[in-house]
Length: 307
Image (cartoon, rainbow, N blue to C red; front, side, top):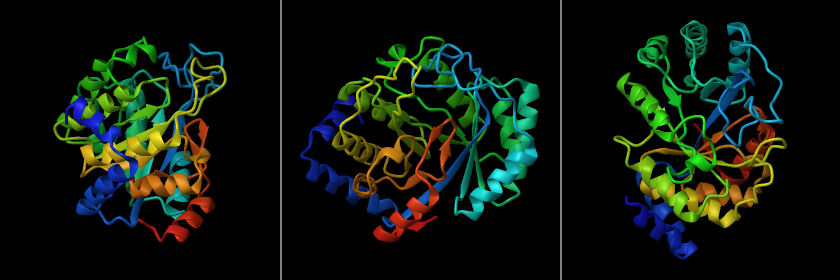
């Protein structure tokens, strides 16, 4: 879809947009099933990038305390707990511009150990060099996460230490290694509706589109450049979910960061609009998330089934 076509979706009366998105969703998925993923920070803080939303950047006053890479045993313990709570995919994130080969060997061990638990595996490690995606594939990795974050036009307002094209190159390496792609963006960073439409159009234009599309609602963090960003209107967030579903009908669309501040009613609208994946568990890297008991209660109210 072109940017103009996605903008036209955003401009539809909300009920018309929801109807179209929900109809699209039912054509490709069971509308009452939601995939649940857990996310663990395996290496926190000290990142050399200056992404304006991130508390792990060494450029920001609000940087989280730096922690070394977790052990395989620590990761397996967290993955086991996540599986017992009902997660089917386990994601591991490290605050690097990109991994050193020596670090990648350790992450590969984590991937193999988590895969042995019967979980789908995903990592987000920053930008990859030639051969690194293949190493992760050989270890049993299923998904690699690397978000485009925002539109190409708005990108330099969010980060200047690398270009969006650098991220696109990494995604090319991921596809070349035969891995599935997890790529989406963050909304509420001062972008325009056109920026949101452009991000969705750019994701949908990938060949093939990402199998998993996380839509994050910015959680403003003190000490970061976006700490005072105004919140996005909830209905605009629902429109973003719906537009993503229509533009990428076969992808999993995930409610990601910011969900802990969403009402049950807003989440229900997002599920109706085509969201069929969530991050599950109390923490997402360095930010809070809705707790598992709250999610279980919401699933029961809505008659949703975890997959």
